[in-house]
Structures are given as structure tokens and as C-alpha cells.
Length: 334
Image (tube, rainbow, N blue to C red):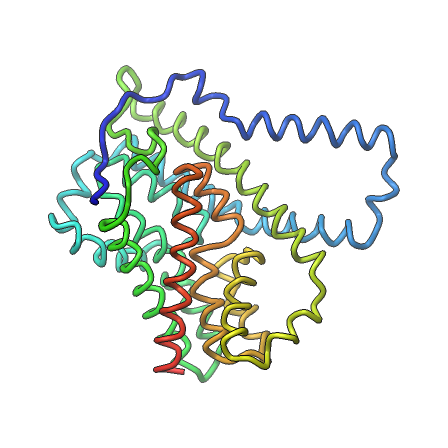
């Protein structure tokens, strides 16, 4: 069933000003302050805690500029772009709009954190969700910065760049078509389906309010995802990697899962993949294709933006499709 954008009343100002991650963050801060007051801070110097803190901070700082870019672009789209512009540019038939939107992802040099708010804005401007989701998946995986980084990380191996491009485009298009076929409008939060400008607001004020709300809202989920990824990095020993290198199938599945939990920014993941020299090229391709489309911080951002019902279904299906595309295209080219 095709899920079209539907106009509904916007959220009340009070609700927009106090999304639940703020309360969670405040409660967490108060709880940590209480624990520190009772137990002291000696445990913060433990090597494992220091490593966790470093990884969490690194992921957050790495993603923050792109989240700023994405939310600023999202606010600009909502405030200044006519609602019918994108529906005029994209093909009328949704099935054709999906691959066009996927290919358009090549023009946005950002990571997955930027693509989520932009896709949200596209839906609110009247773009069919299937096309917006194809853009969401392709933008962080096939933009010029990412492909150039892949070429640098795999010198003398242009097949890896081509395989990443083709597998990522195929995954984005298939997921867009799957949404047209199986997607349900009720899986999306009502606020996502709202279109149009807010009455009584100037365009600049609407841009400021939208940017402020989207950035603070998504930022809370970004921190939660970074904390989860840091926990995995610290608790899972590196020796576990060696147990999966002997099996071609297990290595593909393991690196796909590793991409989800490591949450490496798409501009840097090629260098991580290149360092995993004990794994097959197809397994490393799966790492490169899955990572920009599904990771812990991205799942958290999608949950905060589109809703839990959407994020769980979409991330699971995307992982399966991305692994299948990696195996098929990697087997043919690598």
C-alpha cells in the first residue's frame, strides 16, 4: 500500500518545546550527579570507563556537524521551499520517483545524521515517503566525499568503489519500492505527515523554531546511540573478530552486525573496513553498505524522527536487503 503524505494539524507549541528525550536527559544527569556525590569520581579513571567516554565523545563529535547541517537544511526546506516544488521535480509515478530520489543522494555530501532530518522535511513537503526513504539511505553512502574516501582507503581497487556505489543504490531503490508495496502510513508519527507552513509565523522565525526543535530532539537520540555504540566497543573483546574470519557467510553477517553497532560515520568507515584485512572483500563490502544505512545512532535518530514502529521495521528490512545486495554485487565484482 502506498503511504502518501497527509496534512494534519501541527503539534502544539508546548509539546514541540518539551519532547521526551529532554526529560530523559535531565533525569539521567540528575541520577549521575547523585551517584557521583555518593561514590566519588575515582571510578571515572578506570581504563574501561575512560575508553567508553572517549568512544562516546568521538562518535558524538564526529556526527554533530552533519546533524547541524541536516537540521539546518531541513529547517530551510520547511520554511523557504514551496510545498509543491519536489512533487514537480520528481516523476509523477512513485515507482519512478524512488530511483530518481536515490540517485539524488549523490549530491548531498553528508553522513547519515544529516539525511534523517532532510528526509523528514521532504515528506512534510509532499514527497512520497518511499522516495524520501530512498534518498535517506543513498545520500550517506554514495555522495562524492564517501566514494572518494573509499577510493583512498582501497588504493588500486576501483572495484570496491563501484561495488559500494551499485550495492548502496540497489538497496535504496529496493527499500523504496518495498515501502510502496508494504508501507503503512500509521507507522509514521503524525508530525512527520504534516505539510505546509505554520500560520502566523514568518519564514525566518519558522526556520529558527524548526531548526531548534529538530536539532535538540535529534541530538538526544544521537547521544543515546553513541552511548550504545561505545558500550559495545568497550565490552566486546577484539579477539571475537578472529573467530568469524574463517567462514565466508559468518564473516559477512558479522561485519554487517559490526557496522550496526560501531556506528562509524560514513566518511570514515572505509578506512575501518580497509583495516579488517582478515575478512573477505565481500564481507568488507557488507560493512560499507550496511553502516551508512543502519547503525545504533541512526536507529535512534529514526526512532525520534519517524517513530519506533517505523524504525524497527525499516532498520531490520534495510539490513537484510543491504546484506543481500552486498553478497550479490560483491560476488560479481570483487
